[in-house]
Image (cartoon, rainbow, N blue to C red; front, side, top):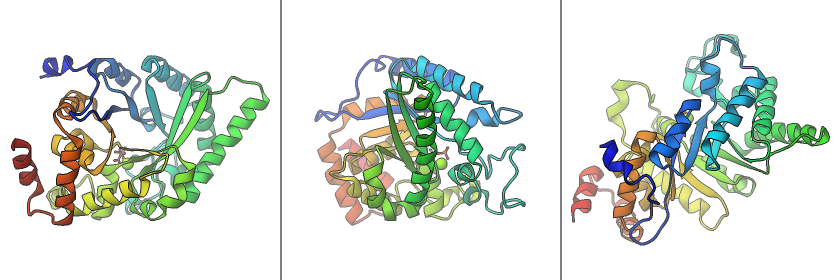
Length: 325
Ligand code: PEP
Ligand code: MG
């Protein structure tokens, strides 16, 4: 199968009606970057920086972080890389980071994790900010913050970067050629204040893995709940449609970086909703590119409008029938 998609590696994913869909990939290890040229992905839409922390016996030194970020950008050969600041804590807890609450989180996914932790452990955030700024010296830097639930968290996190940048400038160090900040939208509350945040961010990436668990109050890792919700359910699709609507006419790049985008019907649904950037598991890049080349965005958008207004009993079956027609 991989061989069949290999021929699409150098083919740009345009839809039949000429819309360019950005098909990016998710990564977390230095070696993952090699998948960029193997799959022909447009870039890395989500680089999970916490992987380095998870495999280290102690907090990785700034120099090690800098080296990793530089290596990743080097290996990406000019393709866009979006670094997500650490999403540790909760279930990805590190023995060398003691929980600020002094006790175990009862609900780790909703606990002291990601940006919440990073903003309190200011040293950790400062070190990572400096490492990213230094690692991207002379190149474009794209930084994304996880688990933002209200705009102030974005401003506080960006402030840490601004301070580090100011220091580097004062010291006359080389800095990135451009710095773009964005957020992950994975906590539903952020959707309610999106209009306030939009003027300040360059991009938004929807983390459908966490978004789904928070929207349905259903643990993403609990197999007993896996059958209870579906990425093609009206709740998810209507939620996403509202986010897309909120971004219309705004100079913000909107994408999805959860697992949802790597599945065929779900990717089709996302394109129908108006998404033009998907960041997905490398293994799915070929098949999603192939899908993109077979669809017409106006047709799928029209079908999606109908499905949103009156959701069929089983959208999955409905979409499969629609695809065959
Ligand atoms: C998500 O939540 O959808 C996401 C992409 O981030 P992670 O899976 O790392 O939580
Ligand atoms: Mg997440």
